[in-house]
Image (tube, rainbow, N blue to C red; front, side, top):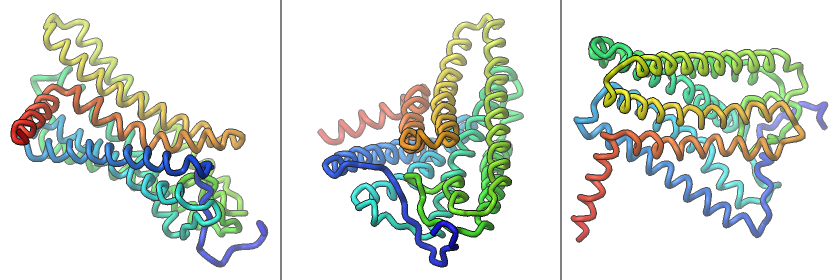
Length: 313
């Protein structure tokens, strides 16, 4: 069967191996996580966009993060919820749907790095060059940084998937909870050396560039804080940067775990769990870590909560 090219476009998703008695509890848990994640991220976007006091470059750049988290969660969880309630033999998806899902899965992964990099740049300018901050971080610059982050993600992912969809297919089973580039090119019996080499080089570059830029940026910020005598400013800078670093570490570790486990087929079940966690943990923690740790957003949230509580009474 593997030596034949499938003429149909229907793929079978392996998905998660869930015991029948556990399917409904897991479904409810994931559904609650999805609702919570969507509510928090949409709420943050609405709060920042409607409150003029939050119309600052830092917060506008931050809006890219919940937007990306909404994308990353929505592209994977609704489909996964459907599959959990289906028999393994009935988890079908068309090839086109699989490619579209893989495209946005990788957009989410790439943008996660680029968005946190431009946020780090904003904090670097604010702390290391405060007198020129308003001159540098104009609305035009915010748009340029945001477009660059999303544009690079779209460009690289388009090339990567373009190399994959050119391949013929001789298999029809996706051995993953959702579609990604590696799952798609494993459907082919042709040589996938180019796909593997491109994927490895791109992964190494983005990880190195991402980790290096964040490390250098926050290293310089730490140096400025240590040499500055303004203790109040230092505390605020350390708190803000600490929040950014926490968000970055959660994202980086989640992403690196998925990439690492992809190279070891014997850990397929661990890889499946890690890949799902990458679409759940960062999007769920980001609004809590960043939103509630940012003083201005936290104060607005408390005011809204208190106002709603009074109105209910």
